[in-house]
Length: 302
Image (cartoon, rainbow, N blue to C red):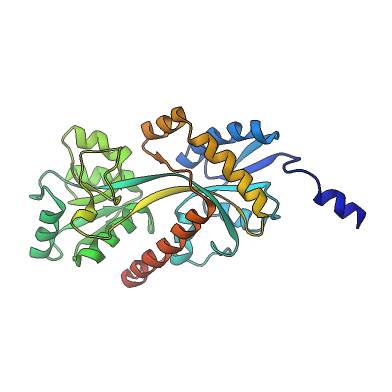
């Protein structure tokens, strides 16, 4: 009993902290490596980035001891993947939110040969010729896939899905005219838009994005449409609230610095820095909304 009392009274943290992130060089890894040394200073302990494949990262954190020494940096696949295939973790019961690090909208783009210069015109064109338009996508359940399926669902469209070995090849196919439209992240599409090889119609956020402030939103034509990618920080469920709040405080304090916000914006992302409760609420709402789209479209892991 005395030994247990001594352990429980030890201040947090008293040993190195580990951030589980996806493959080295990925956008998640880059963000984790920016945040890790910055929060190590006020926490007084080393913060190490541990690169693991994205499909097993949540499992590691879900099974870790709930003491705040194992963190997870991951995008929206954490709560969407279990809707598409069976996973060994429950994103709500096994993982505890810390903060939304950043978010970024996607952009609806078409090949310049498509005679539509707005979302309204694209919907009208697709309805006039059901099944005649194709959209390009990368991985099953990825942003280019689900963003387009949500668009189809809300607009009531029959647009054919063409799958490629990633969003990069799908974007190249759009430029070549093999497909007519795509929902893609702004960062990779922007050079093609500026060069005139693609035409941007709208962003997928509910409000105009500073990443491309001149573009209207899809929601202006389809009220309620929202599809943004989030990068979140998490830890193991059951971690004491005082520890979760301390981690939230240090991460948010760093990413809200003006120079850090500018660095992320230049890389194509908008810093958020939410409370744990705000991230939890977003997850639950997104799971409910996208769960219906996934079920109706019959999307499942291959």
